Amino acid sequence: MATSKEPAGNSSESDIPPRFDPAEEAELLVQSNARKSDANSLFGHAAYDEAIQAYDKALASCPNYLEYEVAVLRANVAACHIKLADWKAAVESATQALDGLDRLDPPPKTPASGGESGSGVIEEVDDEAAEAIERLVKSGKSHEDVAKIRAKALLRRAKAREELGGWAALQGADEDYRALSQMRNLAPLDQKAVQRALASLSARLEAAKQQEIGEMMGKLKQLGNGILKPFGLSTDNFNFIKDENTGGYSMQFDQNR
Image (cartoon, rainbow, N blue to C red; front, top):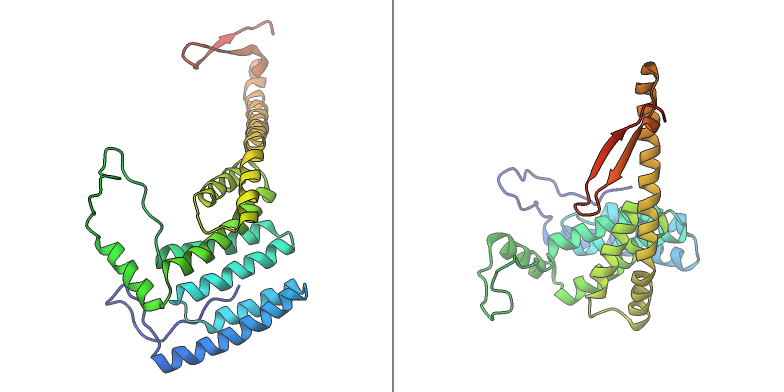
């Protein structure tokens, strides 16, 4: 996938990426927005592969430090991949969008246990948070703007992870849907879809977990049989018994099995 345009210059003396001068940045944005408009039109006509190519061209024109604009484009690419049922690529594009938004406007940190959360005490803003606030102000976007794109990207990643299946992907989908359930800017239909997904994921997660554990144990048993065969033994000679009180296991050896 194409990468967004980088300005010339050496940024070794600062963690802040070098920026184009305002006139050049504006010109690049005009190019990027024109290509994004073409991509949106292609998407509307169900030409999803062509739309991805057009969004890539828009990304190539967009300065990579414009996190919001880049995130919008990557979220749109994720939507194309979902239409093409390319779930893995959709997860990747949506994650890139979310990572950029988190750099621009980090989500609230979970309070540490025993902290002052809810006490009305205003915590001191650290340097990292201050830099993020400065980046958001420079972008000309608000928290609400970022939250809108974050919700879209999360919905798309959750959908893709759910369709991708497997224990790890379903766990990720569950995390995304739980994050979405806490958002107050979702449309009513999206809110209902999130609740339906959360209700159905629990059983699917357990089934996927048991399946993957069974497959792993089967592979371990095959490996163990290969090691024990020269000694005239197999894994069937070993019996694992669970202690219901502690949850631990003890192993018993039976040479006659």
